[in-house]
Each structure stands twice: as C-alpha cells, then as structure tokens.
Amino acid sequence: MSTRDWLRLATTPGIGATLGARLIAHYGDPAAVLAAGDAGWQQLGVPAPARRALAEPDAARIDETERWLAGDGRGLITADHPHYPGPLAELTPAPPWLYAIGDTDLLSYPAVAVVGSRNPTPAGLEHAHAFGHALASAGLVVVSGLARGIDAAAHEGALAANGMTIAVCGTGLDRVYPAAHRDLAQRIADHGLLLSEFALGTQPARGNFPRRNRVIAGLCAATLVVEAARASGSLITARLASQAGRDVFALPGSIHNPLARGCHQLIRDGAKLVETTDHILEDIAGVLDGFRRPDPVPDDAADTLSNQADDAGMSDAQSALLTALGHAPARIDDLVARTGWPADAVSSTLLILELEGRVVAAPGGAYMRTG
Image (cartoon, rainbow, N blue to C red; front, side):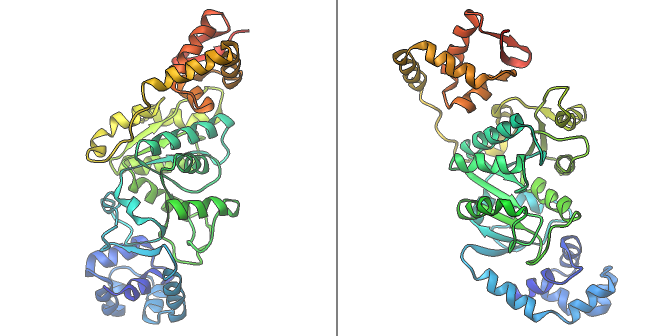
C-alpha cells in the first residue's frame, strides 16, 4: 500500500482519526478511499472543506512529511503495518495511522498506562516515579502522555530502570509540548517510543488531549491513576480504559489531599485500589504469559546490606531510614524507593525502630514517626 496514499488522508485538514477510520472501514484502503470521489466522501459524512482538500491535496505538505519520515527512527504506523498494536486495533474506531519516533518493537510488549495530575504533590511525583520504575523493571512498557507532573515522573522512572516507555503526544511529533520536556522527549525517542495520531505541525489544543488519552488507554492492558482531582483528564483516560474492557487501578491518598479525590471516586466507581506493583501484576498476569520477567533480587542482597549497616553502626542505618521516612506516613515500598534498599533491610530496620519506640505502625500498612 502506498505511503503517499496514506499521507494524503492523514495530512488532509478535517480528516482526523475517527473520520479516517470510517473511510478505511468502508472502502478498505486509502487508494479506494481516494478513488471514491466527492460523491462517495459526501455519502460517509465528510464535510465540504475536507472533501475539497481531499480532491486537491497539499503536495508540499505531503512532500514535507515524507522527508520527515525519512529521518532516523521515524515512521508511519498504519492499520496494515506489522507493528500496529493489537490492543489498539480493538478500539472502535481504531486510529488508522500513528506517527512514530523510536523503537516500534515496543508496541509488541504488554503495557500499563501511568497517568495523573499535572500539578501533583511531592509524594505523588515520588509514587509515579516508583511505579514507573517497578513496572518497567517487571518487563512492562510504561505508557503516559509526556505532560508535566505524574506523566513525566512515570516516564523518568521507566528510563531510570533502563526499561521501556512510550509517550503518546497531543501534538505533531515535529514539536514537543510542553517545551520544557524537550530533553525528556529526546531520551524517550532514543530509548523508547514517541507516538501521535496528529499530523506534523499540529499545535497543542484542548480537543487534542482526550484523543491522545484514548490512544494511551487503548494501547494498555491496564491504567493506573496516581493523583487526580475530580475534574481531571486522567479520569477521562480511566473511563476510556474501562469502556475498552481494560483494568483500571487507582492509588489512594489522604482524605485531606484534593488530588486524591479523583482516585477515590474511581475506586468508588469500581477501579481497583492499588498499593504495590504486585497488585497490578497479579491482575494482569494472563497478559504477561510468554513475556520475560526480570530475575528477582537475590536472597542474599538483604543480608549484604544488613552486614554493611552493621559495619557502619546500626544507628546510622536507623538515622538514614528516619530521614527517608520524613514526617508523613509511608509504606515499606515507599521507603524501598527512597533508600534503594531491599525490602528485607527496610523491614528489619523498621522493626528495630518500632521496638525502640521511634516509629509506629499506621493504617494501610504504613509507618510514621512517634512524637
């Protein structure tokens, strides 16, 4: 199938993914769509301006896109492309094309979306980074939207684990939004994958992001919402994931945190409360069948760290863990992420601190300082 025929559709103003999918579904391929002419396009509800643009294609724009696609790591993934992701094809309608920069092999691996607020709390950022790191370490692709806050933290966590991550963008891939994430986008392009259904030159616009969120939800076996207000685009992603029959997870938070209210609403609506990565992995175990999981941390790793702590003086280890604990409740997984220690070392040091009366167990499996 001619790439130029696909580009004639994909670059036509007014022919978005939904209308493009309708045309492809009816006529079978781009060449047949283009041959249908004005009467055929009108029959399928193509607006008059888009019909005129289809009849008189912008050759310069198509040429420019072809030159862009010739660059390293760039491609157009169409519905008939071998790397077109199966989970996305299950959507109705499925996006008929996606622009890509990076490793399209990532589309063959099971994926989990991590989404949330653009203005999260410090703890929210920490949780997103930790879950991104842990999910990527488990061999999953971490998918998010390159936005500020939770999205960026999830991508950074996956990259820090030398894992797989995909950023789905709400603009053309010849620009980065927000501009402050230019370096992050480049690292994702180098070590992961950037995707967009939008033509080159597409600027950020409010209506783009629900469409981007639909692709995020469609790519993934599950969606995790870390922090979200009640009126949040992340809740749109979760709703779209649920409508597509995918699992939705939400991280609970303090009742005093307004950014926990969206997650709590999701849980009330049937999302699964999640505290650790294992809660997600257990639920999507069937999706992971046949894919490699990394080896677990060796059993002697905790002993090694414990011996190091003994050598340095146990009071130093206690002090370090108290510093990591801070002044708010934290779970063992949180402390593992903050310290880099194995869970066994964190647990044993917490036990000593608890026996000495320096920390107490809090609801939900958390710990907090006394006094």
